[in-house]
Amino acid sequence: MNLLSNAIKYTPQGGTIGLRISELPSPVRNTGQYEFVFSDNGIGMTPEFLTHIFEPFSRDRNNLINEIQGTGLGLAITNNIVRMMNGTIEVRSELGKGSRFIVTVSLELFDEVEETDVELTGLPVLVVDNDQAVCESAASLLTELGMRGYWVLSGSEAVLRVIGAHESGNDFFAVILDWKMPDMDGLATVRAIRQYVGNDVPIIIISAYDYSDIEDEFMKAGANAFITKPLFKSRMLHVFQVFCQSRGMKMMAIPERKERVSSLAGKRILLVEDNDLNREIATELLQMHELLVDETENGQLALEKFRDSMPGDYDCILMDVQMPVMDGYAATRAIRALERKDAKTIPILALSANVFATDLGKAHGAGMNEHVSKPIDIGHLIDVLQKWIG
Image 1 (cartoon, rainbow, N blue to C red):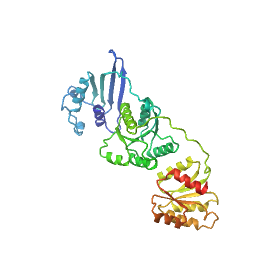
Image 2: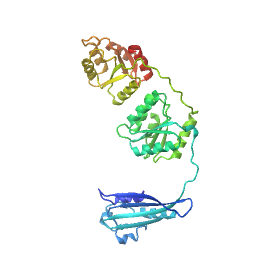
Image 3: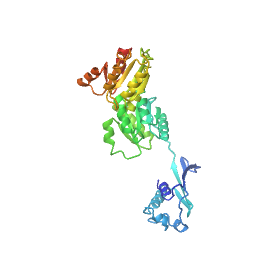
Image 4: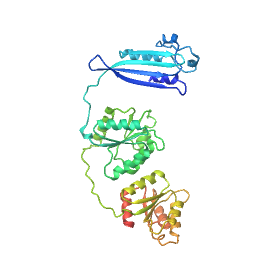
């Protein structure tokens, strides 16, 4: 790391830095010989300085270097570490053309029997990280543990996959979730997963950063454990075994749910919801039950969409209550006032987190048929839809 950070410090903008790792033939049994070559085309060093490069507090007498902070101890420490490992370190450099450090070390080959756990065999785990290389590496480690690794590149995709697995009766055994992601970060993803599927699926937060400042917030949101990057198989195995023990789990095949033909199949729903993620999740859940879904994000657009449709195009409207532009109550009253035969009869179901009597009264007063609380319990919602359009 020190050699790489030096290459970065002393290579101007637009330069090139390289690291090549090679395994060389080893003359010693059960030992591997490895060569690490660090190269850059940065400012380079003078021949005079190269003779003192590994001495403590030594720095090149170069105007460019004088502008860069440093103690002159980094290479001395690096040299000592390499020597303690019975390795060698060489340096080649030319002023104005760059530097090349070659480190060679011998390492004992790993010959212990790798740990596995039969209880974890075949269990599905979802990895969530915006870095595809991290996802693929973690999935590979899970496969080596005998588990089934799946991955997605965003928090919103993760929420949909977790909900889909939950609805099909095949929950993920755990979710491994990166803390820092664009668009929807780890904390928002944890909250969304807990909102829609409860606490049954353990969530492991992974990060390359110090997470001590955010640990409490994540735990309150529903996270179960933290692991620092890079991910190691032994650490992952330990965490999964703790989950098994703490939940008293006896791993067994999950019985397949009997398929049934839904009487809602092919029915068309107009879903009105201003929150993008909530709308996407609700759509996914409804489509799993073979419903056709049209979406819109506020009451005014819902009114226009219904007014421009043909009578009978929609079988039901799911109407969020609190929305910008036009709220759900106003949109329902406007729809009921339209001069068309289905305006008075189409079921309009209120979607709201407020379940006080006054809120239920306002919904019925505006012309809504029934109230469905948020977050959506898809089983309850399907029962309500069966009642009105099944």
